[in-house]
Length: 224
Image (cartoon, rainbow, N blue to C red; front, side, top):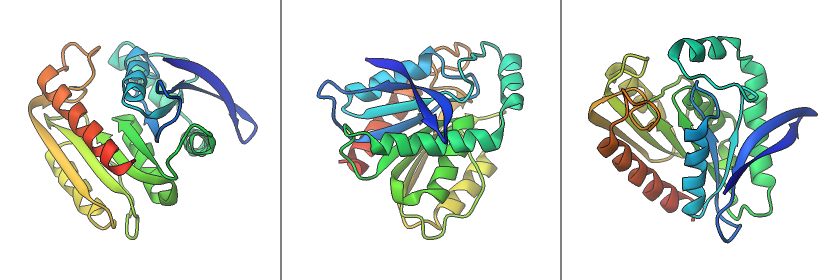
């Protein structure tokens, strides 16, 4: 269902996976991958969203590189040019919104881990383009006063990678300054990456499926 495409952001080549629903038209969702890269799990996630009726764009900020271990992922993350990646993600949002198949005037964004910071940046910087933001076990800073966007968050009970209970609570307090709804869920007995099937040591099927169901309900309600 999804396929790799090329487009340009400020005359710079960019790559992404794009997936369309059977009817080819639907509300738009931008999918932002974790530090592993745009691997098969995230491509599969784009397909799952498309089957639910969404037009999905998942930009590749590693330009094809994939990490299979934590050490490889850390190395890729350290190589990332934050400014260039922010430009890519902003341009990807503009590209998604410009597609004739996207019927919603405002779209949604889902961020996984590393992608959460970029998703939150879009909420702050391009709130007129976003109706809904979904965060998977990732937090971020910034101010959200006057932002007309709704937020949904899925977090692990035991997170050794930054999104501990204190940071999640602080994130929820910051987002409460926005004008939208904020719903956060913490899943008992889970750790970071608990929703990613290819992370065998972290994946918790029951929690992952519950988070997925809540994500779909949220997106369908916010992106008619």
